Image (cartoon, rainbow, N blue to C red):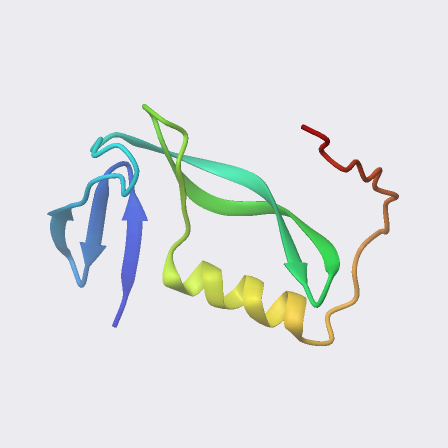
Length: 94
């Protein structure tokens, strides 16, 4: 099964189907490379330059299932990070 999301469309084996943003209902998306952080077993992991569809109205980020699986294999597998960074941690005090 070959699916790809592009500019508010899901292309599924050549057939075009509209989809809406899960957050605001918009049908307008742009293709962008995004950075995303994940917390796995208490450890923060940053993945850079992930291809995604970004809602033009609210900024909601959508990954294709193929991209999500590649990221999962990367962060849970034995892929070596390209660099390490230091992160400052703050505790919210209301």
